[in-house]
Length: 94
Image 1: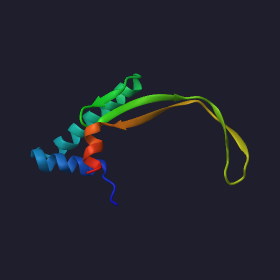
Image 2: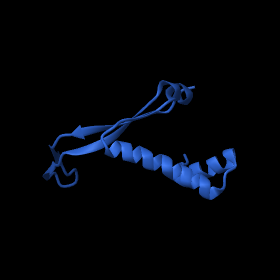
Image 3: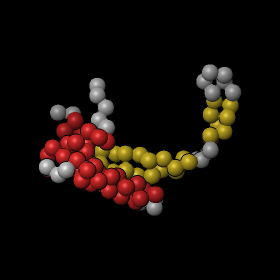
Image 4: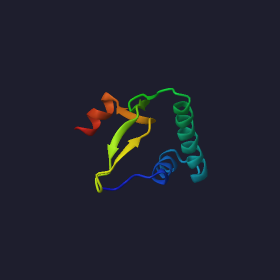
């Protein structure tokens, strides 16, 4: 299974739309920057027919090093979760 990279997506924009490679890369960077900016402000990002990126706060908890068995405190943090849209789920599960 191949991993699709940022360069692959920029190349697809270049091929499909016909913009220069630099412009295609700039557009992709602007889209990603906007998503990151909105998430950093605490907002969810919903892309129609794709899915929703949302933030979740995880509380502090005690974890365990699986190798040594030593307990450690895992600090509270904010994580990003992604929920695919119904349209995407249908396309993937054809």
